[in-house]
Image 1: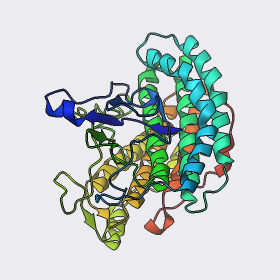
Image 2: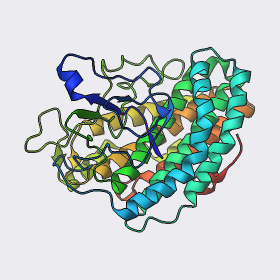
Image 3: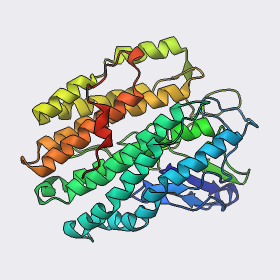
Length: 390
């Protein structure tokens, strides 16, 4: 099954005759959905599961804006079917969990009631994660396995963050923890999409000339997408974009601005190194020390520098590489933000559990960042991701 957030498809005929473009709700995120067989889709809610074999392909690849007739191979379709089966426990569980999560964020469900929903859903999320981890290696490009597992890990962490938010000790930070849960599930979505791009070269295309597909950017901008941290974790963020950000095509012949420019890979690597991002071990150390001030600063630095890096060109013919690195950087930034929130909680179970989530986010970041760009691994053991508890 496909896990996506913020995907919008608008009928060109309706749009050209004055109809408003489709827009996601304020709880834009992941939603259970059927295969796309109609010209209008808005993906909202907690986790979007869209049938892998729907017909919304066609058009441009991840690194090119040119039209292509390449389609997903038989091997890719077979692997996607296996992945869909592995994710099924999660998809079944969120049919109940989704409305509960939305009502909890809206204040319509009490923390004890929502805790029951988290306790029921989490084992199913873990079951799906473990099944995805056991998938046989996709030989044409094993990175697919890594992206799907990383996405599954973040879906599990989403439930765990909501679980912490139900704890009485987290009352003062509950609103910020809800936003953090949305950020983590969004990262899971965008990481999952990196695997889908590999499996399906038509991933970002529309099914017909009557439909305009509006996928979100590969790497989210938390301010623009309305998910930036705020008080007491950070200063009040700026306003979100007036319309949800969408993925821009790569600049080239026949592509009108706005579009994403390209530069040589060596120049892009140089730009990453010159940005002097914080190092994951620094985040790990601050989490251990429960240094809320340091962690807040690290989180803000990751977010601002990732936004600045994404404002620049992609490496030529390696757009996906830039996307994966951007997601890794935001994963480390989220680890810092979660660690900051944990440090602001009173000593006890809620703090311990949230610190564990922060550490696991660092492990996912290690999976996405590339040492050749000057990044060091966090030092957190990968075995953390095999945890099954709350």
